[in-house]
Amino acid sequence: MKYLFVHQNFPGQFLHLIRHLVAENRHEVVFITEPNANNIPGVLKVPYRQPPGPAAEVHVAARELDGGVRRAEVVGRIAQNLKQLGLQPDIIIGHHGWGELLNLPDVWPGVPLLGYFEFYYHTDGMDVGFDPEFPIDRADFLRIRAKNAINHIALNLGYHGQTPTEWQLSSYPAWAREQITLLREGVDLAVCKPNPKVRRSALKIGDMTIRPTDKLVTYVSRNLEPYRGFHLMMRALPHLLRARKDVRVVMVGGDDTSYGNPPKDGTWRQVLMQEVGDRLDPDRVVFPGRLDYATYLAMLQRSDAHVYLTYPFVASWSLREALAVGCVVIGSDTEPVREFVTQGENGLLVPLFDPPGLARTILRLLEETKLAQSLRAQARRHAEQHLRMQDYIAAYERLINRLVGGAMLERTAAAAIEALSSPALRARR
Image 1: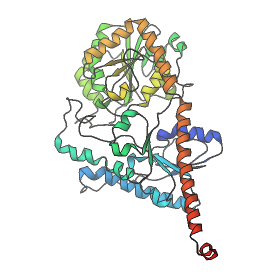
Image 2 (image 1 turned 90 degrees about the horizontal axis):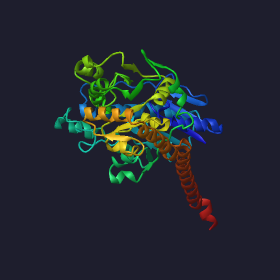
Image 3 (image 1 turned 180 degrees about the horizontal axis):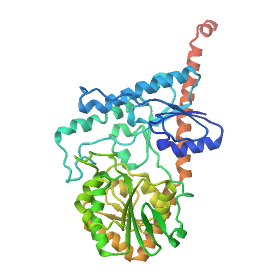
Image 4 (image 1 turned 90 degrees about the vertical axis):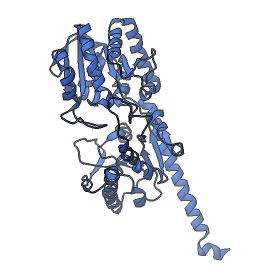
C-alpha cells in the first residue's frame, strides 16, 4: 500500500506505526513535515517551510485558525506537486491539530483520510479554570472556543478520525464521536521493561549521582509548567527532603511552555525556585532538562517513586512508559490519570492541589516496601494487559484496512454505475 503521513514534527504520534510498515518491506511511505533531523530509513520525507504567522491585525481569537489555513495551503501545494509526480496514496494519515490535512481531500478526492483528533477545548469542566491559582478571564472564552475551529472544519470534511483515550474521546461533542475511533496507543514492552540490575550500581543523571542506597523520586514532563503540576511538585519537595536525608529527586523537562500561559517573567522553574529554592538542597534535586532516551529509561527503571501530575488534559506518553517499566506511580486524581491508574491497584492517586499530601504519599511508598513491590508488579501487569504495542498496531491496521477497503468498494460501485449508464450499454438494451 501507499501511505501518506502528515505531521509538522516528523514522526509525531506515528513513530511505531511507521516503523512497523517499513519493517514489512512492502509499502511506500511518504511523510510531509517541517524540516527536522529525525530520520527513519525507508521513509521519504517531503519538507515544507512553516508559513509566516498571522498579521498583527488578525484578532487574537482567530490567529490559530489563520495559522492552520496557512499551513493547509502550503501542504496542499506540496501535495499537488506530489500528485503531479505520480503519487496516488491509498490512505492519508495525519494530525488535525495544525490544519495541515484540511486541503488534502481536494487534491485526492475519495482517498481515505484518517486524522488524529487530540482534544476538543471547553471553557469549563476540563483544563480551563481548573487551577484556582490561575483564574481565567471570561473575556478569554472567545479565544478558547475558537481553538476548535480547525476541529470543526476537520470533522465536517466527512472523513474518519482516531484518538488514544476514552477521556479524549469524551471531550468531543456527541455528534462528533461517531466518526472518531478509540485507538489506544501502545508501548514497546520489550524496551520499556523493569531492569533490577539498574539498582545495583550508581546512576548519573545531570550533575547528580544516585547511589544504590539512595531513594530516587522522579518527575517527568515535556516542559516544567503548571499544566503538569510542576508548581505543586516543587512545593512538595521541601516536605519530602526534610523528612528523609536519603532522598534524591530528578525533575525532567524543558523550560518552555507547551500548554497554558507562560509566566510574566522568566520560566516557571525560575518562578518556583524563587518561591521554594531556599528550602531545596541543590545536591539532592537536579533539573537535567530533557534526557536522551537511554538515560530516561534507566532513570524510570531505577525510580523508587514516580510522580505524574496533570490538569484534566491529554495524558503524556511518559505515564504509559512509567507503567510499562514497573514504576511505583503516584498520579494526580484527575480523569486522564484515572484511565491508567487505579487507586491501590497499580498506583496511588493524590489530590492535585495538596503538596504536603503528595509528599506524605511519596514518603509512604518509600517506607512501605511491600506495598511498593505490589504496585510495581501491578503496573507492569497493567501495561502487559492494556498497553501492548502489538495490540495497538493490530487495531491500527484493522482500522486502516476497513477504511481503504470501504473506499475501494465505493470506487468499484461508482465505476459499475458509470458503466451501466454509458451510451454504448444503453444502445445495446
